Image (cartoon, rainbow, N blue to C red; front, top):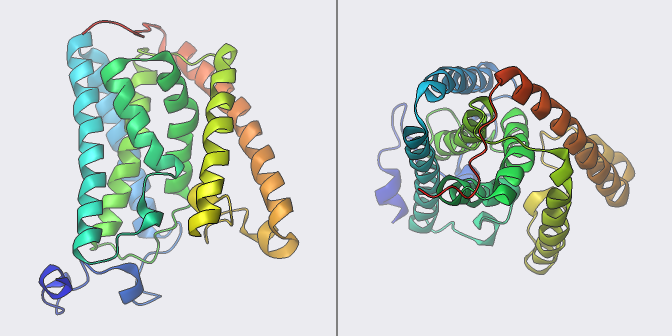
Length: 265
């Protein structure tokens, strides 16, 4: 099956469908190199342009756009799973138990059901998490012309785009009064994911060790697991507080605040 999926090894697209362990270690992209910066600039550009036209659209059109974008994101995730199954590399570590995997379903649920709880998680957890993943990607082994490279950047880009559209258009406004919902989500999900990590030897949400590009890597290597986990948790809490402040400024700057929670379609 791999030979059918991979195809010809010659030429620029010879590595397009290859899995990371069959690629050269120095054949990927560098953190904040031209490929990485190019993706970041492209995602920012798409957010700005799409956000401009999204704000001008009426509520019904905006709803359809959210459903389409979150649907595309889910299809990209399923496409990735199908690809991994076909090449025999699908495993527990690719199940959606990490934050960005959960974010796909959080944003999909918000697009279709408009629940306050999902909106809060989407804006305060999902979007910053996807941004962090884009800034410090752990898929640098994959070269530019590779399926997993493109698929992963597109998924994380969409996870950022959807809440950006919602926030800048005023369709939903997070409130620090609902911060308890964030901690309820984390206190429910994180321990469960930690148990899954221990049972199956995974590293969902980086609860066992940081990624290679993470700013926490030096803490983990020099001081060990417990200091890393403490600093990681404290940083997450501080980031949540900072994020609420930033989102409040964004909402004030964008003006209108049309909350559409539980609105009937």
